[in-house]
Every structure is written in C-alpha cells, then in structure tokens.
Amino acid sequence: MRKRRNKKCNPDENQNEWPEWFTPITHPVESEILAYVLKSNSRLGEVYFTVNMMQINYIVFKRNYEELVRLQDEFNKPLIFRELALQTDKGREITQDVILEFTRLLHNFLASAKMLVDVTRRWVRQQFDGTEFLITYQAEITKRFATNVQANFLEDLRNFALHRTLPLAIPELRLQQVEEHALKSSLGIVLIKNHLLEWKEWSELGRMQMDMVFDGEVDIQLVNKQYFDNVTAFTRWLFWQVRNFFNNEVNQINSAIQSVPKRS
Image (cartoon, rainbow, N blue to C red; front, side, top):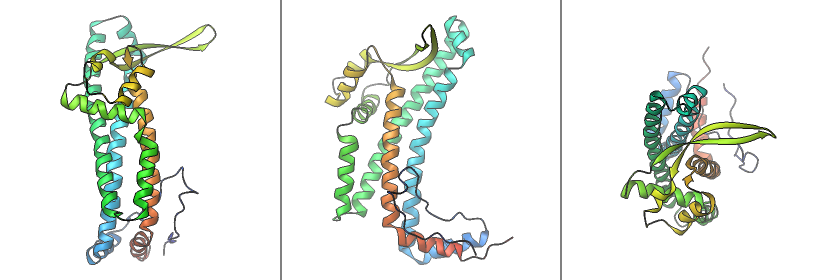
C-alpha cells in the first residue's frame, strides 16, 4: 500500500508552495476505481471536476504569459540584434514577424487574464454564497487588485484591443550600465503610448500607469510580469483556501486511489 497523505493542509506553513490535490494515477485499476467513485458520489465528482477546472484555467493564463516571455527572449538573441542594428532586409523581416506574433500573444494573454478573473469570481460566489469566506475573498481581491495600476491598465488595454484596435508595438533598444564604463544592450518590445492615449475610455488608474511610469513607450512586458506575479500569488492563496475547504472530499478520493495495491 502507498503511504497516505491525508492530513489537513496549512497554507500558513506552505505559502510559497502549491497545495497537493489528487494522487497521480499510475495503474489502469486506479483509473477504474476513480471513475467508479466519482460516478457513484456526485459530491466527489463535483469537487474533482471543480479542482481540475480551476487548475486548467490558471495553466492557460500561465502558458500565455510564458509564451510572451519566450518570444521576448528569442527576439533578444545576439544574431537578431545584429540584423536589426545593421538594418538589413532580414532584420526588417524579423521585426515584422516578431511584432505580429507578439501582438497575437499579447491578445491571448489579456483574454486569458479576463477569463481567469470572471470564471473564478463566478465560481467562488456560487460556492461560498452566504459564508464568511466570501467576505474574506472579496477583501483579498480589493487589497490586491482594486487599486492596482497594473491590473487596471491591462483590463483597459484588453478593452482597447477589443473595442478600438490592437495596440501598436515596436522594438526598443535598451542600454543598461553594468559597470562604471560598460553598458549592456538588449532588445525589448514596447507599445506606443500616444497611440493608446487616443482612446478616451482609460480608467483613472489605467491612465495613471502610463502617466507616472512611462515616457513615449509602454514597457508592456514589465507590466505583464508585475500583474502575472500578483495573480499567481493570489491564485496560490485561493488554492490553499479551497484545498482546506475540500479537505475531506480530496482525502476520500485519494483514499480510494491509494486503496489499490501497488503493482510491480
């Protein structure tokens, strides 16, 4: 028999980790047992489905962000830098292709961020209606996002892309001092601020993000990273709360899976 891990999780002790959910399936019999348990107990089936959908929603958001980061890293390779610096035909072709792909991936990231917000909010309100946790959840949302300029800016940017036009992105050469007489160059992708400001529907906080931090270009990847880190920290917090709330159901599911003798 496998060692059972059914103790209640403590988010305060594991705040930098993700909670464990279900025992991995490693044998066909375990899969059959799991299917039987979920079919015969609607509550366990609901919990299993809910947890998996919560994880999938976040993974979609996470992978969209990772694709943006990966494209930025590819764009900043030395050979590409050389082609752009020399303004070759190949360099111009690379720039056009990268900007198009970056705009597509940015659109996906903004859409998945909105999806994650809306789906999570709706589920929490349905699941915890009339409970004290709903108050705790809303307080956490307010603390992390209500006055957060990055969150408001990206929500506005999504509306800009959906209801006006796609933002204009351009490459940017960056120089960073690494030593007293040495500079390090890199390539980034930024949004044109004046093009964004032609839209009159920016929220106060969304406009504040541009007015306070940016000059002529919006360092969108910096904003994305700050927002992604904030959402990830919140999602981890929420997953711990849900893990404890569903502790008995998760343990029942895991006990059924672990009841199958380990096969060699």
